[in-house]
Image (tube, rainbow, N blue to C red; front, side, top):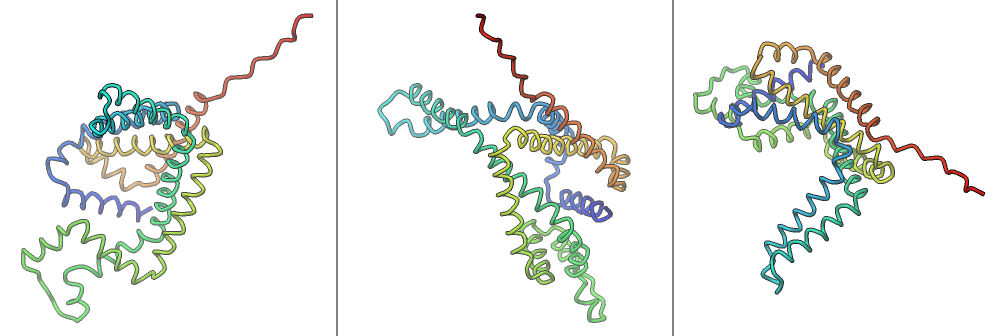
Length: 274
């Protein structure tokens, strides 16, 4: 759990270094939006997925019609309506396939997160020590002090440079890490796809509960970090408390959505009057 606290701190520092100040100033409205959307998905997500996907496909069809209407000798309103209806129908009819693909993405992301927590996150302290600007000098028993420009270059490395350096460090210590990641992602994605295809209702409830709870916790974290930084710092130092709150919200979402998405009881068939 201490690794998680360190990871949160490093993520915060990374954001402060690389995210523009005008974006960080919008943390409160963004947090409020995440919280509102998360609550909506946590409560009604399983019911909303099919109509939302259908509308998204219909909108994509209308957008494509507007872009390529000049290729056919048909009025734009007619072309847009036909394209929206056709693609909207594809979104509605192939609902199970889209759910399966969604669950595949969520399952692979979740599996990769768990694997990363146990196999990748512990490498962060060693990476920070190895790639510190004075690491080579310390190893040689010397003393090095970077000039301001060199220090700034190290502290404000681009995300691409940081990721490249960390991946080189990771593969030097775990040569088979790439293959393991590929196997885990592929296996979780296949399992998620089958789960979504064969148990669509349950898969939707589980997926939307997980996504909605994560959005709620992210929104609350953003709001508290800006409005009550002391409370946020205290919470980060108690990851078990945060994990318990997350698990409680997830369970509440699962139960509530299961109740809201119960299949209606079958009506008894009355015997025909003789």
